[in-house]
Length: 493
Image 1 (cartoon, rainbow, N blue to C red):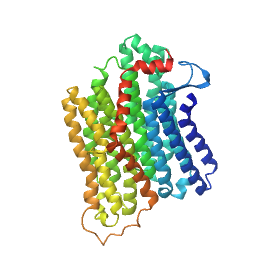
Image 2: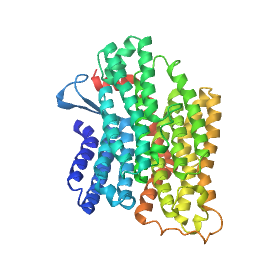
Image 3: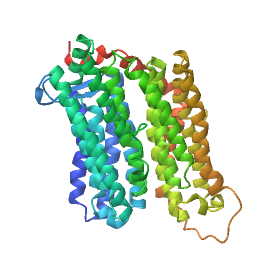
Image 4: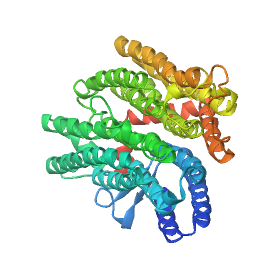
């Protein structure tokens, strides 16, 4: 049973190797990619059911007992994010053949796609900090290849900034891990948490914790470390942008969520209080960025930043309801961001431009795209009864119960402005009279539209089906507030 924990890593890794050998036969590679993506999703669903039914799955690779060997921990938090990752992977696997050029497909897109999923899955499942660093590097190597796929000048220019900032944060990451090992003599997260509790988190440990937050905050694009994000996320093909927007920053957020609910929980007046202010500033500056541009892809890219702010807000408040909201919002945001990046990619394709000022009356030519965007805007902004509302409601209730009035007001105002920033695309680009002088491309194919509908279906379910999902998420929050459960399950004490 414990071997189930490694399947979400092994399946995409093997798939990436296999499609590398079939790369010249594009039709076969597409089919294999879709088959493997579906298999991986089904396996993830089965492992998720097993974890929520029977409890956490701990794999001690090579029979090396924790904390000495490489440990994989499939608990309720990590496996929920694994399932969400595979939903996104399945949708993009079916979208990609209709979006990519033949050149991009034959330059090993599908191999790097599976390598990215491998890295993301490994980061969610690993039980020690050094392997978290390793899996970060795996997914970053894949992202370096994906961001330049196509070889356009603007891609190469933006990739330099993206690579440099990630190399710098990776250097700080391995430094922080080395410092932590030097102080505590272990890199196993459960044993680190145990020893930090025993020494009552001395000042040096709090300093290392802040350094780790800086690393993860850079990768998650929190204020003021978000400056690198928007443009590198819009220059690749839309399917790559969707993968980046849905997954990359979320691995950074997961790392913060894991480390600052398990390890650094003894000086929350220093660490977690700062998170609330950083969350508020991320919301404000992210929304300002989204409102300041007429590029529809940039609008969605900037909206990543306030979403990260909402999730960090719950971690900072650090009560059960706020943490439930953060987890719910994290899952919601992964799915809706992927859907929105795919959707604006289709809109830009059929309109022949990403510039909102050059679009008008698209609803007459592409009504399905228009109403999909309309629904997506409501889901993203947290309008009831959609999934964003459930997460935000829990976050706001958690904030009010802790008397965090300022961040509550900022969150409410940000939600309204997020709605406006996306509705601006609908109002200016889709609404209005039909313009016969503009020549638009043919209708978007079903292959582009159905994956978006698939993702929006999950978002709608997370909203109207919250009574089925929320209790499980609330249970995860309760579990996170008691680190001893994780420690005992891994170290078997």
